[in-house]
Amino acid sequence: MQGRERKLISIVKAETTAMNGQNMIIELRSDTFTLPTQEMLAAIARAKLGNDGYGEDPTVRELEDLAALKLGKEAACLMPSGTMANLASVSAYCQGKKGIVLVGDKSDIYVYESDGSVLCPAITYVPIGTEDDGTLRTGDLERAFRKYHSRIALVCLENPHNLCGGVILPPNHLQDIAMLVHARGASVHLDGARIFNAAIASRTNPARLVEFADSIQFCLSKGLSAPVGSMVAGSIRFITRVREIRKIVGGTMRQAGIIAAPGIVALQQMVDRLEEDHLNARRFAEGLSAIPGIYINLNTVQTNTVVFQVAQNRFMSEGFVTAAGEYGIHLSEFEYGRIRAVIHRNITPIHIEKALEGIARLLATESIGSATTSV
Ligand SMILES: Cc1ncc(COP(=O)(O)O)c(C=O)c1O
Image (cartoon, rainbow, N blue to C red; front, side):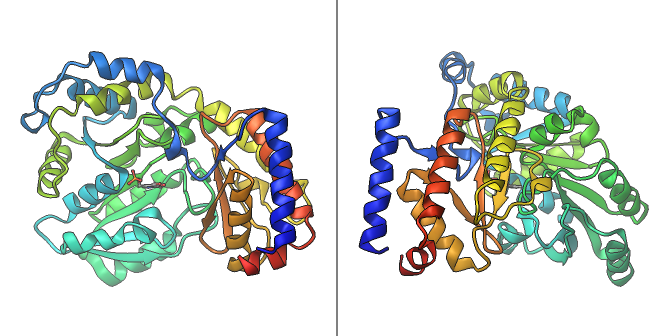
């Protein structure tokens, strides 16, 4: 970055500091930055604990029952992370046979997690093109079933779809895909890391939203603000297999009630407030759309994720993210030369306003191009 730009940024930073009386960091990289609430910390302190490896932690049992109930499934299982929850789920369908798993080419499971299949050689991922709205085309799936027949064990969907900008799957998509898949003897797993965002945004009961999925994973540690953990839900038989795989991959925890206690608070107290995050995301997106030099498709802003571009090529966005970081606005580079902001509990309308001001000023420093290429 050139000296003049550095100086300008420090002037704006000083102004922002003067306005706020403090150094305001606006953390928009992910909703995984949320810290546990006071109620969560209190719940941890009073949690009844036991050895979950023996199925004897009462707080874990309570969380698992609550998660199963909320999602209308027979059983649920606490996992350390969404990645392990997806891996154990996919692996459970492929156990004892070579299983082909059809998965969207922009899905989190395929893009970020498929390396995990080296640990479970029974899994073979076959990517299917993802539409802009996060859906898979039925024609593509039918073609894959004609090609691989009964070797296909599973089809995965994602809702909301992260790489498509946090968009919510159209209402009947899961049902349509499930009918096609079940008729061919395979199963459907839903990566619903932020399924409660989808439920709140679409004003749909979460159980209704996942009704046609054989299994689902969701994260407690994203917008729901719990410090750790994800849940897998499905039939009793399926969850028994997931527990076995969880043990094999080292995911069985002991006094895990410490993790489950804030998870219960997350499910009881943090779901309805996601609406606030969605409103702030919309506020941020609309503000961005009014800034010259920003390209944003407002139609994709459906939950707490805001994806936008400042320029066509990837290096420009890389530099922009670095420069915004200098202002205390933490954004992340997203795939395909895009930038992602995720709104969460710690982001208020004041943060949104400050972030928009900072971004507008940054872009107004006429030489963002040279700033970005020289960083
Ligand atoms: C859609 C989706 N699935 C799965 C995961 C993985 O969750 P974790 O970070 O808990 O492993 C993420 C993480 O951001 C995600 O966005």
